[in-house]
Amino acid sequence: RPTPNRGRPATGQQGAGQASQATGPQLAALGAQVTPNWNLNCDMPGMDDLVIRVTVRLSADGDIIGSPRLQDTRSDPTWRAASEAMLRALRATSPFTVPAGFQAQDVPFRFETARQCGGR
Image (cartoon, rainbow, N blue to C red; front, top):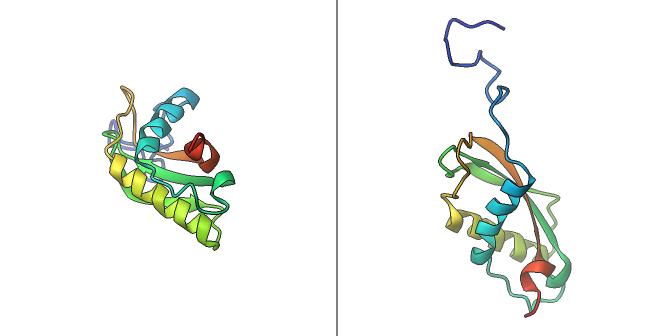
């Protein structure tokens, strides 16, 4: 829909433009920034096979916008401990180092406790 505001999207079109979205390798690089900050109690029973999925809105500068949104939440203590540690790690990582030309966008992350606890 046309708009008189040159360079600005019409209302309701934010994020629908031609700006590139993060690709698989870029998402992996963003996730790799988080893992050093993800401190897990790997000795906790059940900690060896959890998957934590979270969506984070990142600004063009790599700052977290709003609150990260956990997916497929569970109520068991092990999952809660792993997901709370993940949220702390995300906040500790912000601002993320983002690729050139990065635009504000929702970034889906998938973290595996088995990978994080491997070799411990």
